[in-house]
Image (tube, rainbow, N blue to C red):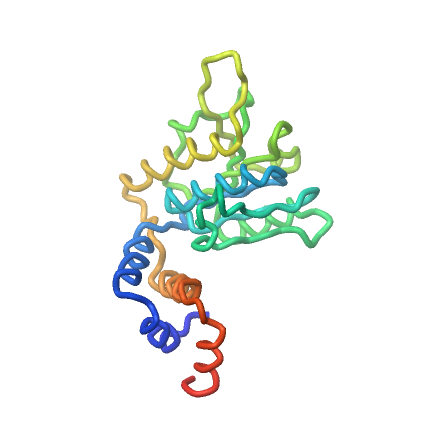
Length: 223
């Protein structure tokens, strides 16, 4: 929940340079697109995709954990995980369905990445629609449940002997293409003002080393 008074209080503990960086990056963040990772088990892939989401301005990352628990390696992710909003699905018998329902409730169409013949090429994708791009477990790819319920299928053109890309490479290629075209389009892809303020407050807290004591002081003496 956004607390403007708390944000104002926390700003005194962060340099002006840091605050300006936060504001600049928030102006480039989007929820027009989001990413779903379905049961990835190699941490370097999850970490690399997290890093790509940050680089290309994707704020939300949805992680489905049916068989495998995953986490982000700081060595690969380079701290990018601090600045994203994570949504994990690991509490129900059908976590994939739970994710599909949650993402659809937020107005996203689901686009599964797959090399199938009936998939559309990335360059032909309509960036005007609010979309969640799904990347599946290494080797097997996106699950049948996800494929069956997807609103569309997407593939990257390949011209060599190898028929698939590493999942983190595929995610980077897709995100670079769709976000670049999105930014040049007339789509209103920016975060809403209240979303920016909420995330800004979260980033302030993550930037302050003694945040626990500062929050305790705020609750006891200032709020």
